[in-house]
Image (cartoon, chains in turn green, yellow, red):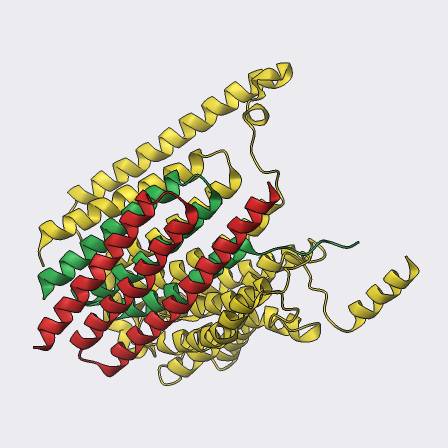
Length: 86
Length: 331
Length: 94
């Protein structure tokens, strides 16, 4: 089981790295934003087996927080600001 | 633990961190660098987790993933779209040419000196034998500190004075934010999909904040992480175009802003009056006092971070609304 | 037996994650990349969380894993919608 956890953590890290390439390349801002979303979800995915490997149950809490806040950055990116009326 | 496999993991992680840091500073487009910086924060949270620092990873997740991205994006929007190469090169300006070369060399030399000092310190740390004076002192006194999480014990008991001063710094920051004047106008009301997300996300975030505050006594968590999560809930409400975002108005807001430092000082002074040292909790009461201080600190931190995102004083129903209506009628 | 089921789920989750990231790199357009992203987010994380939930000893951990999956499900669906809508807005502007 430990080897499988190691494999999944490393594989997910690779997935994060691939998302990183899209963040650096992606021609439009939307491409970068969706790659950031993948990095976030890959981060959540990495923390889960990592918490078992390193024997730190608190990392599940970190994953939970990352998962909850995943949409906030995208919402900030796409939100339309009201016109200032003075 | 198979060290070879984690080596690949660590290598990829290192490359990602350095690559993202470099890229976010090297781009000329401000929005692009903000997005890269957000991704950097996410990868940094994983790095903290890998370094067995879950408290810091929690804080990085709350701030880096949620708040700092929203804050920087809101700020970047007000700037012109591209930092054009002409505006950054002052060599075309005859007077500015000399100053810019000198200051560039100064900054380069200072950065090199800093990097050299850090490299020397790192090598020195590797070569010297490790000593565990501090961890032994902490674990020796943990039983009488009132909590079982050593990080909380250090922050709220052994070095409580430092935390008090940090909260005072946050209070000063809020006063600075208030000096900026009116808040930014806010966001358009959200469509049905985002609104549906907000409806359940905000209560869950509030519950998570309470959970993090409570669990901080015996597991990673604490006032700062809880406060950042609460602030994220308010940010989500504001991004969805709601007018009420959980920040109280008027007198109650001042109480909440001052609560972090205020409760801390009250506890310290009361203990002083009772004949104990300043912030020297009696072991029987330590747990309860720490929880009390942390609750007040959580509210203060949440209000500060939320007001920083909002960018000034909020216009709320009441006196301000009446004044605005008058102004609109007259124009 | 549970270990076998758990391992299969974890490997399946890993497969979807990697497939999603490769899709993110190779697909030609923003909208097609969003397709790849949501597969990685929903299926990848869901299967991974399910496999780990089977493996874990504590009920609380399994509940947290379920909550993580649900949160990412909703958040990534909303994010994909917001990004696609924003891209559409940029297109019609130019």
